[in-house]
Length: 344
Image 1 (tube, rainbow, N blue to C red):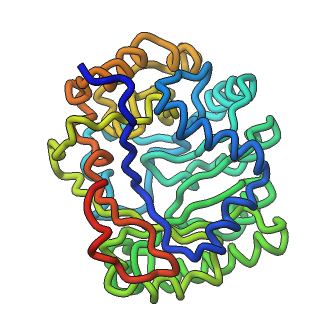
Image 2 (cartoon, one colour):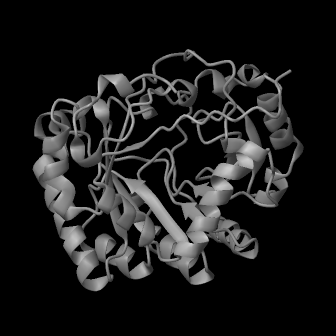
């Protein structure tokens, strides 16, 4: 059994490519900055204290499991179940209403698919914001970010949007075909100008890349996008074809004390990393989020983490988080420092 008083080891899975000034601006210009600070304090403290809050600190709603691209570096080709679909709006409203009743700070409207394929994505944002969710966001490939969708998301009150842009022209055109680097640059630029003109600077716009495809010249990538975005991040590349990922047996995952995920059809997996739903712990069609969050399955999951039995859980054996290469932040696209590489 582990020493339950030991410090929880947290491996980061995303890093900043940005200047310190832009990094500070990104954090300080939250719509509800004080609430954000409280949420972040809880986010990093509760897992270390092994404290289970009365309701999750964040909920991910999968707006769509469908996607309009087939990127080779994505985990989607390795998902076993293919029951693609979009979240029913009434099911979504049930979830949001419960989140509001429990004073939830943030939701994200994405998980395994492209959120803008849900024909009611603008309404989903609008409903959450009007009900009182303080921070609403999602991740997108940006292909549909134009016209009515772009303007609708801004007017609906979306707080921030993350667009995945993996590399400059050569890499992007190969990985994200049929989307092109020229097209995505144009859409990002137009959206950035539009949200500043009619949205008062919101939603804040972030792009993220996989380090593998920008490491040859990260400064060029940063310079290309810095004037048409609010934030630039990058992620290490993971090999999702592995059946079992090399694991750190002492790693304790923080997710069971932070967040919960609801799939497009209402199923609730054990963890946001359980893309195949190897372990289902609930169903929003039949239960409340709180019932699942405080239920026996989640309690057993947390105890398994603390008692050194994490690897008895199927999805944990495939999780990349414990072995994510800790590349570190690279302010303003600076070159990688080999002395800072390696796991924490």
